[in-house]
Amino acid sequence: MRNPPEEHSLAVWIWPRALPLREIFGVAWDDPEIRARFLTLTGQWHTRHPSPRPDPGPGDGPRPGQWMWHPPAHSIYDSHTYEESGDDWLEVAVRMENADYFPGHCRIEASLTVACRCDSPHDRHTIVETRWRSAGPAAALEALTTVLRDTDQWLAGSRRPDWWRRRSGLV
Image (tube, rainbow, N blue to C red):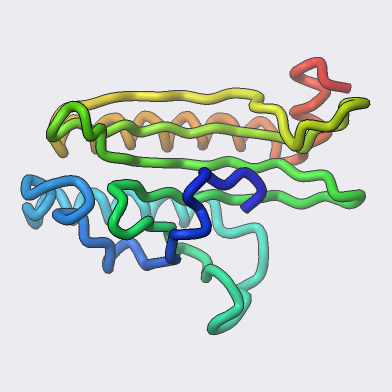
């Protein structure tokens, strides 16, 4: 992951089916229909966008389809990084987190970033992003559906960082 959240070093890779959604987002996420819908959405997203890198094998990093979870934090995320020659890259990331100051609310967001090529490098440029806040699991899953569709549209344009850099005027 090229664009990790600050607490990335505390996170563990975990399969979506093993995520303790109740612990992360609250008791309402314990509903079997909510869990099934979440697993369907994450599974479909990974089917449409398989990991761009090969399976690293046991103990060598995340396996394709795994998400990051920050125990005991109330946050999960996933990302795909598309590497190019010359240390160029494009990354799409999806994140869900509990909005602690609003019980039962979740923030769902996605971003598409590219490597910085400026004279004074600052690591990356965010090309496009989307953010939602929702109350309750049904609304959060609707927001996740929308966010994942946005990433589908972004990646349908291109998975090449140079294409996105030109499109955004970052030549």
